[in-house]
Amino acid sequence: MSNGDQTTWRAQLESAMREAGDAGPVIAYAPAESAFDVAFDGGYGAACGPDVLAWTDSRVYFPVDYDGAESIGSAPRHPRPEGQGHV
Image (cartoon, rainbow, N blue to C red; front, side):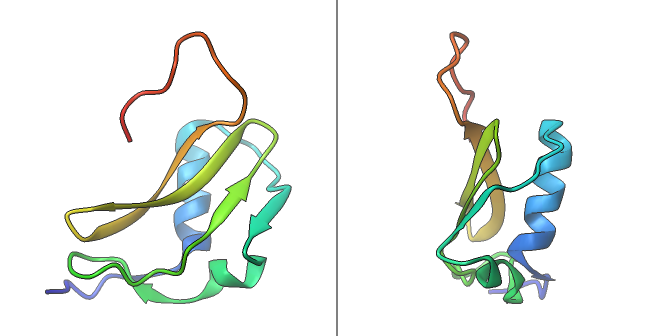
C-alpha cells in the first residue's frame, strides 16, 4: 500500500548529504547519474526506486528500505575508529 510520496534518489541524496554535513561533490554514481532522476513512489509499500550508489570524498550513499518506505542512507567512505551507527 502506497501513500503516494513521489520522489527521486537525487532529492533523497541532497537531503542525506545535508543531514550528514557532506558538502560534496558527488564524485561517482552507479549505475549512472541518470538513475538518480527517475521518479518513484518512496512511500510505504513495495520498493520502487532503482538500485543506486553514490560516492563523495567522505561518504558512500545507498538505498534503504524500512517497512516499505525508501530513503538514502550513508556510511563513511573510509574506516573510522568510532564505527557506524545503525542505518
